[in-house]
Amino acid sequence: MHGEVVSVTKLSPQMVRVVLGGGELADFVDCEDTDAYVNCFFLPDGAPYEVPFDEPTIRGLPREVRPFPRRITVRRWDPTRQELTLDIAAHGDVGYAGRWALNAVPGDRLQFRGPGGGYRPHEEADSYLFIGDESALPAIAASAEAVPAGRPVVIVAEVEDAAGELALESPGELEVIWVHRAGRHDDLDNLLADAVRGLPRPSGLVDAFVHGEAASIREVRRVLLAEGIVAPERLSCSPYWRRGHNDEQWRSIKAAWVREVEAEPIVVR
Image (tube, rainbow, N blue to C red; front, side, top):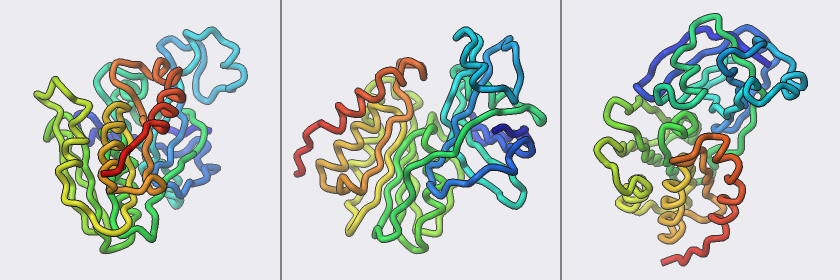
């Protein structure tokens, strides 16, 4: 399936909103999960083909000219206008998805598969805790908008600096805590965990979504489970990326890393 770029908006220095329309989006089937994503295919420079392309044929090409797959969160689907909004984390020339988003113009085409997903805020929770960095912000924003009205919602979001802060909304009672990386060159793994450790303890059944950089969300997971803040069955925790690894390197070890984290003994205090 593919769509054409309708508009491009730079939400912050690290976040670009791309709206797709046309193409084959009339056949798009929405996913109710708030962390819904599509598997996008970003073409390398000089690719000898264009979007749309035949995937089985492309798989037979040399690795250096095959497209690079990346999971991109669905920020919003408008069934009336048949437009798909993707918020893409971008860090200059680093990363195929971000570089494409920064250079995209109306009329450009993007091919993808999906959507898929796995999380939606539990309707019976007493409060919600959403934690992550820029890579998780689109899913965090969508999740905050999907909670029942009046329920407490706390977002702890890591961004580079104040320029990376986005306007977030929720029908719940929303509190947003921004954590800045700028000037913090040591112990980046604990920035989010330290912020979570300092939160007032929520009461009742807490539903938590913790996604983002691997080492960072591992530390957050340890705090939430060891402090008994969230029950394991109500914690959605997934590493989207890992510092020091490109996407291909991370995908090659991600499954083993996740098994290691899930097997880690946690002593509840």
